[in-house]
Length: 165
Image (cartoon, rainbow, N blue to C red):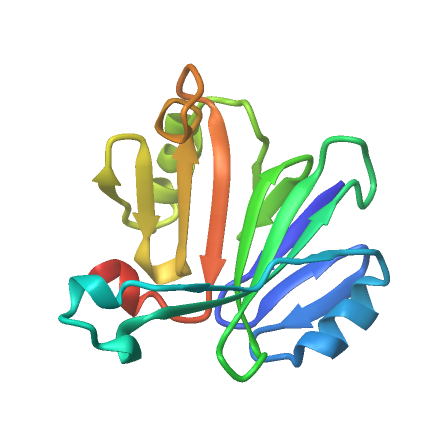
């Protein structure tokens, strides 16, 4: 199963295009599969002298087993319920600018392919790589708590400012 990531636009899954800023209800309808709503309020006010305006309001839908027994992806929304992020943990190959990212395969191979196509990358933490022009990150298994340097995580977003601050 493939997901085609379209930088600055969104992605295609099951032949359906999902765009950044699509309404949550619209995305759910387009995907047409059951999801688990995973909305949370994370209280961080104790780090900011009781300022509750700094609390994190996560709006997320979790999709498991869309097309196979081991696929897992998260769709994250802004405070107004507009799509802003895609996280893929397993079960999909991801096509980005004609480069196929296969989970489990060596992450440096993919980084070299992006580099050849003029896409710079930066290691933000050991095993985590930001590709700013594509507004995406990829991470290896070891950085995600597993073993080895195979691709284990894909993240794409409409806005990377929180990753570059």
